[in-house]
Image (cartoon, rainbow, N blue to C red; front, side, top):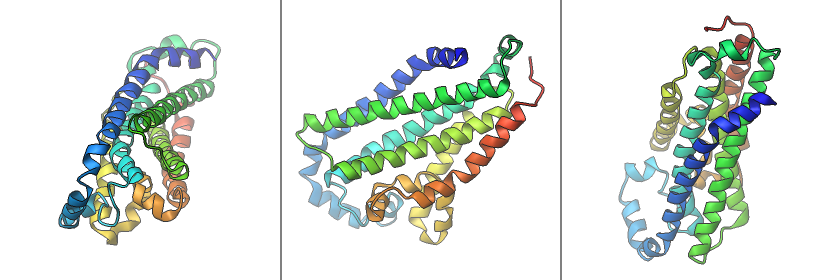
Length: 262
């Protein structure tokens, strides 16, 4: 488990910074809830008149100032975009870094199988994502406690389970892509996250292209859809993992056989 320990040692500061930064915004958004809730009637009336902007963020059929809806809209964006970017950055670098920074020549001459290295790196990546999500969840409870509110437990659990699945889908996809690359660069991963996000906005505007829901993990993290579905959208989650899972498997097979750049 030497590789696993080394990866955790290498990434723990970055993981902590990302976790605390996102958690700060989560708590800040929650502490603002009592003030903005006082104007909920006015804001809901404005949303009804926003037309395409209201559709873009799927606001037209919900009370955005009901506490869980507010949390899902505000902090869903923080953990959705922020967590997705963190997962992409971590996964895109964790394998390709060995060739890009010329450390493969020191790692792989040791009596260790490449697949074993990849498994340990994958576990390290999963642990980082789990830590980020766990700290964010704790921050959510702290923020709610500061304003004397509490979450409906089932909706809160369903929502964060969906967000975790989204983070993992991005991570699995980017990990697989990283196995094919010779240089560590976060640009492809960040580009994928932003593309997924804007595809979801496009689906919200034009319901006729709902087939694209299987191409973006942001579709199944929408708090309104989770509530309407009565829980996580497992069909969308399962199909959403199909392509990333395939790329992940192909990436591992390719990396275990390719000539490494040194």
